[in-house]
Image (cartoon, rainbow, N blue to C red; front, side, top):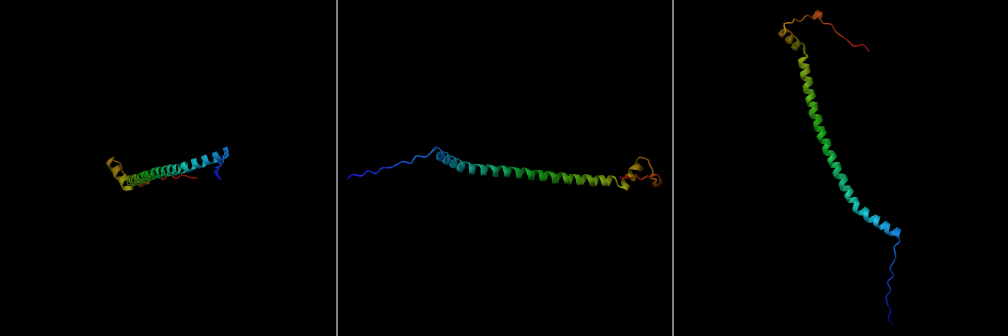
Length: 101
């Protein structure tokens, strides 16, 4: 008796082929998308840090300018400039202006 082994090949339906193709595609695309998103996030974080440094530098500049303004607006500086220009300081001629709301 000679028995031959018969191999039956299972046929896959189109839906099963589609599912397997989709699963393989997702397995390939998932790591690529993760790496891409992490690289993008890293780039954005780097830009944020650069902007923070620029903001801090601008704040230092603003503080320096504010201090210079306060020095130039001081009463002694005003009196000094007035004397240089040949003007005199008379407290009775000063009027205060206030804003009413």
